[in-house]
Length: 312
Image (cartoon, rainbow, N blue to C red):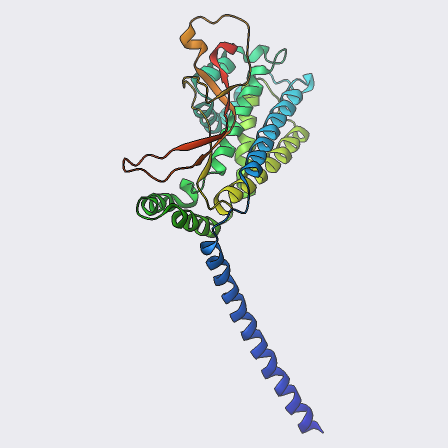
């Protein structure tokens, strides 16, 4: 009886090992088939309308974040003294300099020149936060960022120059899917520190409860930007989609939307037509093959929302 039991146990062990090996092989084959299916797919997972809706929703959430932070800032209980402001700025100087590079010289000067009066009208502060987070999300939605795979972008450009666009875009989708997921915790901390540096500049006294609100909303927005990136670069095969912004100082034209129209006269027409900052990402898609000159034709799907210098 004992011999039969031992024999049955040994057979069971052998069967379990075979099952385990078979399962591993099937998982590996399934992973290969997923990649093959992506390469052979000729249709988009998402429509252009769905991507447009994602971009508009992300822009709306960024606006809401900036509005919420501006409301928190107006609380008189979190006003810093000049001494506290100086200490806070020393701690976040690197983050503040990075924000200044993003939002541009004109808006940076507006903040530094009027910071004592922004609680009465935090419009400049709200614009700075919108511009900073818009730029952050635009970066997070790029197909191959410098940190995640700059070498992939170089290779992708070469593939596009030699292969049919559908072949190139399928390769892009597979490559994008294999890049490691972004670090939400690190990205949230960086976005929060950028916002805090703007607030510290404007006589804000650190509040743990307010910081938690900012972190929560920044994390939610970053998750949306990750989802948008995945949809654009892994779910669109018929072309290249990308979000974009207009750099500060750019000339305003019909391909942009003026987010804040003001009635007051500006010093010069030149200044009035210069972009102060971008507060809403645009969206474009390649609709033509690469030309012999290396240029591509883009279809504008969402106009970037900008604020002009004449607003101040």
